[in-house]
Image (cartoon, rainbow, N blue to C red; front, side, top):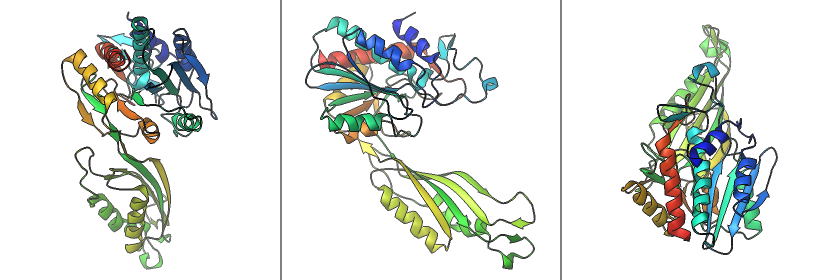
Length: 375
């Protein structure tokens, strides 16, 4: 069993449903401390954060990831215990297999191999590990980055280990992400007997034309790097359950994934104006998960692309699709950011899994990235 696979399984066996860390960071810190890393724990609230550094000066190359995972859901739906990693026909199954404990393990073992080759490497290698990526993302990477900025500790290059690939490790790199703006909408009506609609005000009927316009609207056309902005409803609820009662209220949850052609404030204004134009009496609460970001293409991207080519013989595609990631916080501090991880088709699903070959490919890509950038 390879060192990367062994460490992946050890991490997966630790129960770390967000924001719990389950002792994962303690395990990683011990491995890094043995390599000469300075270890600093930066807890905020219930969230555990690890900042570890080795070397001096610049460039600072940071590996970033998270130890927390999403809940497993009903255990009877899994083919095996999600927190007892199991290998079947060359595939590792369990929660966190792809998102992203295999990535964390590959980062650490690649660093171990690199330091054995280059104990006096250039610049500084850093690790920023949080247990708050799958949760609110308030007391994790965001808070650590703020702390580093106050201390004038800047990161030049950041490799985020999110599962960014599609079919095989390294076939895609993320070089940015769309913004994510969510809302909780309440449409106010007047409850009444269904036989006397003139005495009531049905919020479903009020909202329907506005919803149709929101759903069919062309927000923008995106650009060469970003998909067009999209609007999706995730929850819609009204009524008491009785067949003869006009509801007095409708609640809806929706999300806008948006390109840099939009701003969060501009999107809020468009939605509010549309609801007002359709005479929808409402209250709305907004939740901004992250603004869009696009990383500049510099030495980090060149080094990581070369590493992928050295391992696979192919050039990776570059993309900004998918959900938000902690890469947005590193971009905010001026770092060049690349996301490279294992394939993502199984993440957040029952029987989450990763091929053993992809774990080893990722280890090799991280190792070549270090060689290309800091040797």
